[in-house]
Image (tube, rainbow, N blue to C red):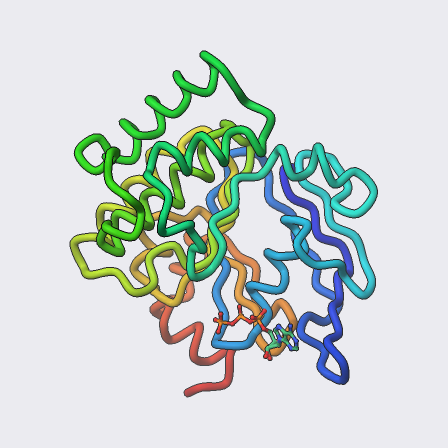
Length: 237
Ligand SMILES: Nc1ncnc2c1ncn2[C@@H]1O[C@H](COP(=O)(O)OP(=O)(O)OP(=O)(O)O)[C@@H](O)[C@H]1O
C-alpha cells in the first residue's frame, strides 16, 4: 500500500478531531478526501506528513511508519499544505534550490530537477521573479513544483485549488492530473467537479469519522450526484 491509515485518532485538548479512522491507498490511485470544514482532513494529512503526532493508531507511507521511520516516510511524500506557506522574499529558483537541499538533492541533479519541475509546472516565464510578485495561481504552481521536486511516490495536497479563479483551477487540476499519472495522490477539496474530474475513489469524512469510502463508479451507480451524497452523509441536507 502507498498509504495505510489504521485506527488513527487525534485529540486536541477536549476535542476529538479524528476518531479511529482507517483507509488505504493503493499505488497509482488518485483519491479525493472530502469533508465539511473542521471534519479532520488537514489533521489526517498533517499526521501522514509527520507534522503532527497522532493520539493513537498508525499510519504508513510507502511502507514506512510515519512515527518510527519518519525520514523515509517524509522522503516518499510531496506535500502541499493548506494555505501554501512560501517565502515571499525568495526568488522562485532560490526557493526550489532551498527546498531541494532540504530533501538532500544538490549539484547537477538538483539543477536538472529544478528545470524539469519549472517546465512541468509552467513556471518558465515567472521563474526569475520573487514569489511575492506572483499571482495566487502561480504561487500555487511554485508550491506544487516544490512538492514534485524529489519525485516522491505519494502526493498529499491539502485544498490545492482553494482561492483560485476558474481558469487557474482548471490549470492546476491539469497539473495534478499530469503529475499524478504515475503517483499515488491524496487531495482534499470542497469542489465536487474536481473530484469527478480527477479521482478514482472518494473518501468522505465527517466529524472525524470516515462515513464513505467508495470508487466514483460505485457512487455514480447510486444515481445520485456526488453533491447530494455528500450532503446526505455530512448532515447538511
Ligand atoms: N491545533 C489545534 N488545536 C485545537 N483544535 C484544532 C487544532 N487544529 C485543528 N483543530 C480542530 O480539529 C478539527 C479538525 O480540523 P481540521 O483542520 O483537520 O479540519 P479540516 O477538515 O481540514 O477543515 P477545513 O475544510 O476547514 O480545512 C476542527 O474542529 C479544528 O478546529
